[in-house]
Length: 60
Image 1 (spheres, one colour):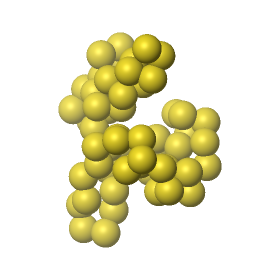
Image 2 (cartoon, rainbow, N blue to C red):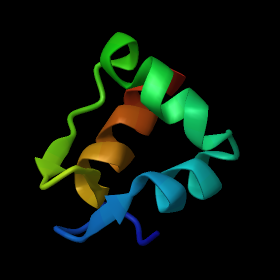
Image 3 (tube, rainbow, N blue to C red):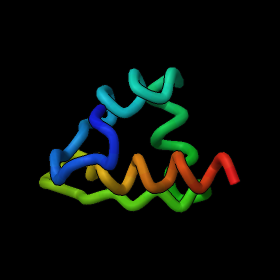
Image 4 (cartoon, one colour):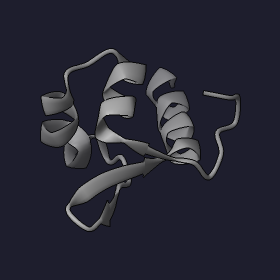
């Protein structure tokens, strides 16, 4: 992922791979983590820039 993120939407699979966690963790923890998601049909998508912002906040 590029620095600063983009408007690109990531699938659960892409996000899990990027974070190095199982897909089930994304489904189980996304609300607890406060990670914004978009429901498109029956699929969850995560905006790349929101993920980058969330990651930066985790380091604080």
